[in-house]
Length: 438
Image 1 (tube, helix red, strand yellow):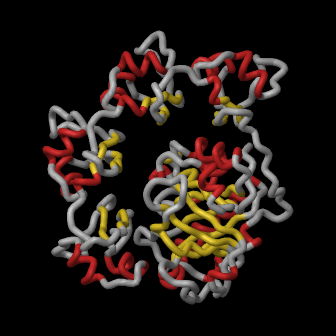
Image 2 (cartoon, helix red, strand yellow; image 1 turned 90 degrees about the horizontal axis):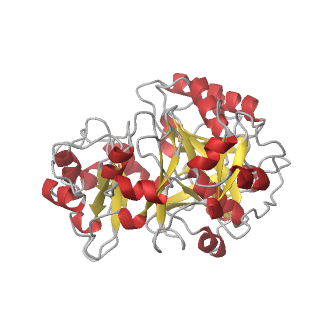
């Protein structure tokens, strides 16, 4: 394996965990490549993917997308899901498969699934691909059937990735999961890349499409009309037709990617930072308002909704940052999205805080009643433990993780992690649990 000095391009990879990103600051800091998490399985679309894509494009960065693979979901279905998102977008870097879970499958089975996914993505998009994984997973859970694909390897706190039996070189090296970059609050994975990460014959010159505002995009679905899309985004049919060079507003196609200028967006966040929420089937405006600690009336007002009982799956709602209640008492706030089966007491325990504290800062009147998809604020002052004056690195447990694998990634021991996290049974950790590393 090459050392880190073989890298030609400085890069980062980001998911919704990074929150709001100032791409102008990121670019000015010397970062050239940004990989954006697009999808996971066949059910998750990064709610910030379009926002990140627009920000990176407007700052002339080299862009790539990655898909987090779920072995229990059909590989071709996942490939279709990922490809449907990236189609119509301009990007310079290979489409990446993020494989780091086995879910009980053997190395041969997992590797065959990966090949199926990668070949289907190539067929559907006509673009080059790359495999992202970490060193121990490559050693234990994959086979050399994947050797024909370039490698983007994760191996932290070293200058040269460890050897594995499949690849002897990399096109991408993720050397830290807890770096800091201007323009991003909190930690961010850091990478270096070679020319091999770029799509063959790809144009690395990305035009600036910002035109003074931030641009997002919308992919047309079957049954959509331009007037309905305009209404969802608080703009006009004429404006959408103009910025997308549409001569006939009655003629749009499923899969067509429309630019939605930020200057079209209605409402005012009174100087605050806006976040967005994409409406899902079964949602009501009152439930969404409750999740975000605001009111139905406020959401209707800033989204120009005349009938609060009428919202659409796929509709993007602006949620003013000034709607969010609670205080971090001078600390930095993080958030947690409730999953099915979660209880407030379990979440409190994971983050080293109390049920009462979470209920208080999230305006929850009944601690026994939380909803899947609800976004909870977790005050940084809730975090337990002391790093004796140092900066703590944390890791959020994913499905299929073991404490021993996490320890190996960070060059520590299972015993040490169990000790500093008060884990009595090292074989029992939970997805979503936050593990302190130092």
